[in-house]
Image 1 (cartoon, rainbow, N blue to C red):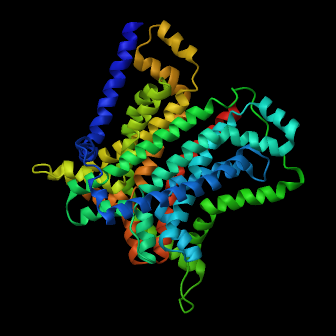
Image 2: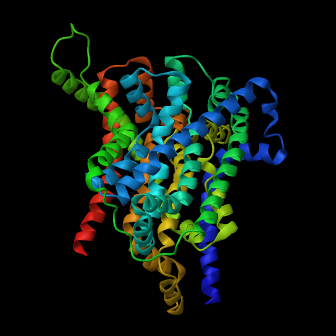
Length: 520
């Protein structure tokens, strides 16, 4: 048994070294600035400090909005009997799969909003599914006895309070994640500032170094954000672990709460919340497919058909390149994620929080900062073919989004009974066989979904694609250029084409799990 344990450490260590090799180039300049102690030097300038703290409070407001929308949506969709609850639960996470810039286009077209506050609102709606998803996972294991006791003692009000207590640890982490994604986003604030009153955010300050061809300085400029985001993530994990100790243990799953005569009102609220996060902006983009002036020839339907055809004709090669690069990045995640996820799942407490924070570092950097770190590393004499090719793009995407696959699998691996792992150890199975048979095979759908999410996030990634030469001819960059320079039906059609393709992994996963439930 000791030899098997050592073998596990060898495999996990090898996977960790490979993962480190993927990220050390892009993260190197940032980490060097931190270790030298000059990460916050630029914040001594009044202009830079103003932009930094503006980004902080904007992200905090967006995270607050995400929690205010995501938490009630999770409770209504997963723990109460509202109309279309299953469809609500299926559609809730889809917003995370869309480029935030697409949602910004929808909200601007729908309301005419622009500027700073439109950016705050859009990012809040984009990341509301994060607290919603985590809260729904927590509510799914709420003991039925605790729910029924609350319902008997205090009615629906006390039952809802019990749900809030159960969801609180997950919501704290979900709000932290919403803050992280909001503060590192460059595309949405840049777009909203271009439409209305100009304002700066810290990722924009990082991007300005790209315009000056000073890639090392741009990468180092992102160092304050990675430190802040690491602290916020660790605090979110700490709050989750601390408050989780106050919630009841596992037991029979609680029944959904029946609203009685109030069901129509609560159903309307649930679908209204989903409208804010997904349906309204997407509906506006669908409407824009055939929008034209009063003197334009043809009908809305004919113009929409022409827009869709143009999206296929002009964008299919870029879409193909994007999915090709993203699929290779997903394959890397498919191979590495199980080893790293098992390492995380086997740790508890402070060690687990530190490991998760370190694993998440590539996600805690603004995409523009991560991209400039990659350029500073790879743009050197003799490396031009690698620097300008797709190889760098695949490795950068794989390193940046590998943590998503690792975290998803780690959460699923924690549900595997420890007795199964101990039985495999007793039988003397090698570590790869043990990992495959005990952990990966029972969670096959989650394993494939984890790789699919890496593909999705790589395709929707814009900030990196703008910077890397090998990614310039991609779906995200084509959409970005079309949106900024020609607001026409093609932009709407191409955005919807991307959205439909990005929805596929989630839809396939939902179909897979539904079929498995029927078989059981």
